[in-house]
Image 1 (cartoon, rainbow, N blue to C red):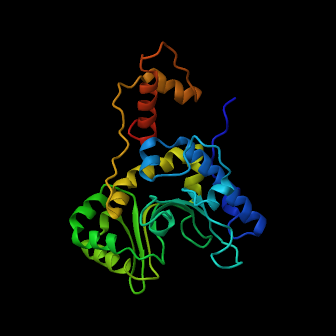
Image 2 (cartoon, rainbow, N blue to C red; image 1 turned 90 degrees about the vertical axis):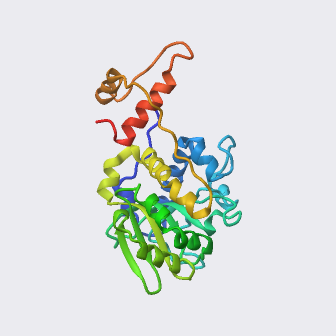
Image 3 (cartoon, helix red, strand yellow; image 1 turned 135 degrees about the vertical axis):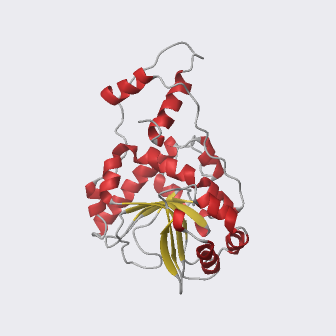
Length: 286
């Protein structure tokens, strides 16, 4: 019997803002999400973010967090406080940027929003509000055309800025050079927040269902060029294999939800399976 894939449930979202037991249970749900996320990652993303420890090692999830695991899951209490968090997340960044702690610069986060937020889940790039990033600020300020081009390759994504004096929330298609100037100025100061990514309602996430992990990986991969640009490291998108689609296999998958390919080694079973998977998950095949 195949193991059940991870999916966020109505109950997960209801635990936000609950008591200590609720928040702790929600945290362990994020542990489950992280485990499947790591097992599903291709080497391209795993190596770019220098995730640790290696996937071949047995590890205890709690111990991994204590050792600075990447990805990590947020604690149930607010930093330096006994107050419970209303929201939790899984996050990771490229180790060695700006130092060995991946939490001190731009991060990728799967973030369950607060109950009063108009959205319920965020997947994208986030810069911690007490981190100054002068390198990224200069790159954005001095190369606005290049950065705009990267953003415009992410239709449906949003950019949010919350600064000392400047705030905006815009679709990437509507971002201007003036907006980039504001972002550049704010991330050199304290008390700011910058996010680039996709926002979802609870109903949208529940509808995605057990495809949430591959969907998250697809979003992370799409954001790779922007993240790489901000830290000065080239990110190459995961290549999508070009295959001649076997429509019989696709129809079987739609009707039966599973299919078995068999044949001797070297006949293209794995190659065809990957190609069909990429097409189905990307939405390019109807």
